[in-house]
Length: 88
Image: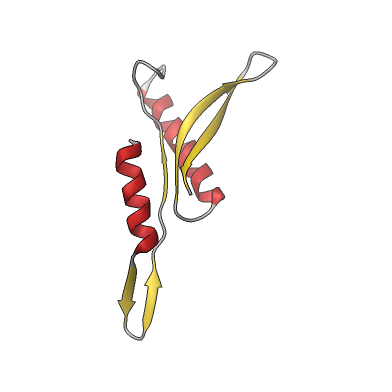
């Protein structure tokens, strides 16, 4: 996914649109979760929830971000969602 998201975010960051008498920039926030051998979700619903949480995190971090869902274990044994940012 990184190979897809990095160029997309860069293209949005670098592109300006001429609209009438103004140059307008469009921003992009990407948050994603992947299911596979390294990270398995219990259900499709949980995968979609994780992606949604990560999109929200990307938007909170600011424009032109792409982040990947990551789970982090807490000292009490609970699992908390976190996001790993990889595109400034």
